[in-house]
Image 1: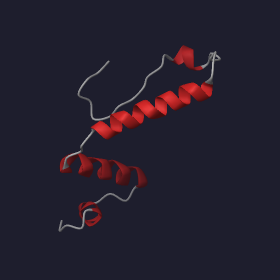
Image 2: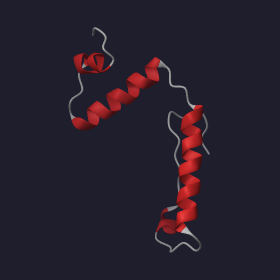
Image 3: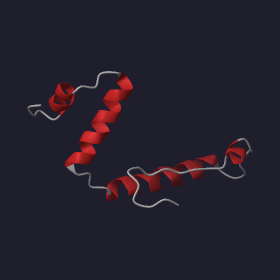
Image 4: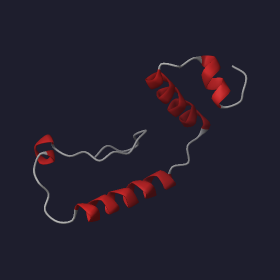
Length: 77
């Protein structure tokens, strides 16, 4: 486990991903969604974290600039 990371993630060994799972996939899905929701609810992102997330999403779309980021928060660059 890695603590104090900017994101929460669930990691599985690659070999396990190809194996059929026994039991209810719906139950696992429900559990993981609930757990991830609880983790997200505990986070109270500060302004810098929110800016980082916006920058990440804009970089992925190819539309990142200081002006665009400032516009997302309705502030002057």
